[in-house]
Image (cartoon, rainbow, N blue to C red; front, side, top):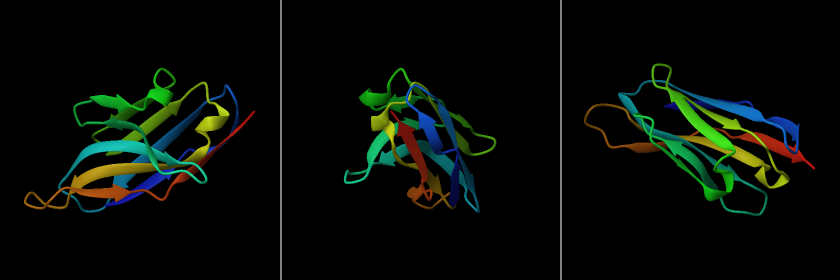
Length: 120
């Protein structure tokens, strides 16, 4: 499974960005998908996750500002980020739990990361 993330960039505080991440390759199914972020000098942290059925989970710091969604037909997850703050600046990584076959275990896959910079 390959995850290709896009949509990062430079934005002013209060602005918005939309990240996308598409899963491709040979796999049987994709379970939860999500976004994590890592700022310089900090550990990678959860931003949001979404199940195939649309159940979502958000970090407290982004609730009400970020919205995660997915298109199961396209195996793509999105992150709409509004009201961005300087503290949201980080490399954002997409994540997907997937099985390569009906009988294989769930494995975590990671995208290459996309940089979000927020100027104050």
